[in-house]
Length: 340
Image: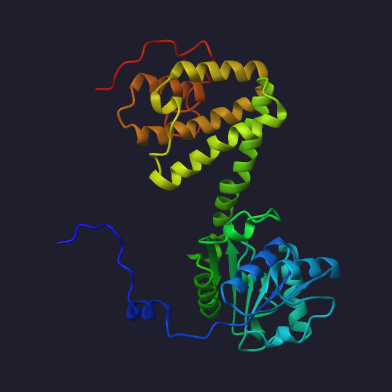
């Protein structure tokens, strides 16, 4: 009897039942010559998906995007080839998506057998693409759950990336097919959960960048040269993310809270009070979350240490709103007692 924990690869019959009948790879047209639209066009093309064009507002940007993606670029009037494409992806700023949908409808560029997708992660397709919905087979969301910038390597970041998918049946089926062609994973969303999904994405990416900047600033305040601070932090941050990927949560949590090291936390707070008081509230708020995770990581963490750390962080030790007064660096000095 096999004891392998590996998930068996689905056979052709199982895949057919999951994905439905085989369909030819759709021809795609991308509207939006920014970094997301350009990266998507390039990735789709390299994955064997025919990309008939990439359209942008400004001719110079469209030319650059066209060269980077390796597809035909255009600007100004929408080209006829858009109407011949089976999937139209609108990848522009959120505020402009309804405007583009309205333009496609009013200029009669859409066909009943087309699917229109947008790449916003916060608002559902039925809302963003309302003007286009009566004129096509389906409308949906195709949101790449990665941090897309114009830095080198962004295209490679799409390898194995997750895409948030939402919309009606025809659109989600087409979006899922494109994601599979790109070697990504689909995350099924509903219209009423998209804002929460996007908040999670922002916390997991933008807030991580903000924390990196705060940590860099503290190192500089501690006397580390500006040009060396970020370089010093990157291996630490990379190892933390790698630990989450390799051992998961809560096992990836390390540091003084996991060890019940109250003295180190007291010293942190004293240093922040003296040198960076603007960061103290954030340290305490995140400390409550760290303590909540640490108690899962180390169930037998000493009771007294938990109480002391909770007091220092201004919470109850469970990651909830503060239930104990904020302690100073001189508090919580009683010896710890091992939990029985």
